[in-house]
Amino acid sequence: MAIDPPPVIPSLIKRGSLPAKDARQPSKRLSTRDSRSKLHAQADEDDAEDHRDAKRRRTSSEAPEDPQAAEEARVQAEEAALAARINAELEAFAEEPEADPENSPWDDLDADDVDDPLMVSEYVVDIFKYLRQVELTTMPNPHYMESQKELAWKMRGILMDWLIQVHVRFRLLPETLFLCVNLIDRFLSARVVSLAKLQLVGVTCLFIASKFEEVISPSVSHFLLCADSTYTESEILQAERYVLKTLDWNLSYPNPVHYLRRVSKADGYDVKVRTLAKYLLEISCLEWRLIAAPPSLMAAASIWLSRLALGYEQWSPNLAHYAGYAESALVPTANIMLNYVLKPIRHESFHKKYAGKRYYKSSIYMREWALDRWAEETQVNLAQELPRLKVEIRLEREQMERQLQAEEGAGVEER
Image (tube, rainbow, N blue to C red):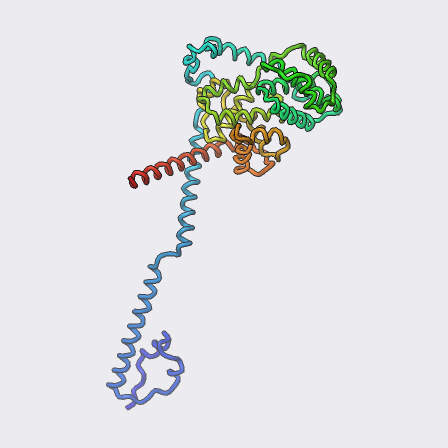
């Protein structure tokens, strides 16, 4: 007796356990026992295969993720945490009060110099108060180039770069260079000079400044050699009288180097900070946009920017008091210095001077620090960038502290 196929066969065909062509062939005549036994065997085999498939699918879903995807997820999580930390730091920075030069609590550092007569601690406050008044009387006209017919700011930069080279060759004091630059700018503010006489003005002012500041000043003949004997000795001496008469013999220029030493006292006389600040301060000899800045402001801004570049972001009440300026007052002047550093190198003598080991390669360090953060020739808005820079410094300091602690811990375990 023929038995029709049971309903389980179409389901097996549908699942793919049996080829479809077998379903189309006529079924063979089977006994009831054989048919049931074979069908049960086939069903058991299908159930076993389904179990293996389900186990395989469950195993693949529980397998570990791709290592690359896991690493990307970890990096994204760290970046999100860092962004949240930066935002929190920026909010905290916005709420930090600014140190005021007069009202914020500061330490009397001059009290430690009572026994040193060279520091004149009993008069030093009055001296610098007087210098702050005098510096306004020796300021040149910041727009004097508008009245010059043959000169341009670029020519002034070339002249100053050459004078820096002469200054280095004679090993003169820093005060001599800054006084020389002030005399040149004040003279050009009062007199129209031809291009042919510009170098004569520079040599003459350096000669005057060296006689005023140096213990032993180079003679006129030495300056003639530096100028390739372009002028005669009588021309330099005649130009000296003319320059001094034009300036009314007023050489009482408050030198920015004095202010720099005063602020450095509040900084603990950090040699690297002060050396880098000297480089930034000397930018004022070449960058005409700094002519309008008083010497005290340039000194304070150079110390502030050098500290920022070396990883010291705080302008403490002591620094604000001994500099005489709050941090917000220093940012515009420091911004001009920073934008000068980001420009292509135009004054080789100046850059080479501070690229040596004597000055801790300050020009190289400062340029690399700036180019690591901005592209060359970028006009940076330092007021907007300052919060981010300070947060960056804090995060780098924390990372260095963690590394230091890890290294110390590893050293303890080795012992």
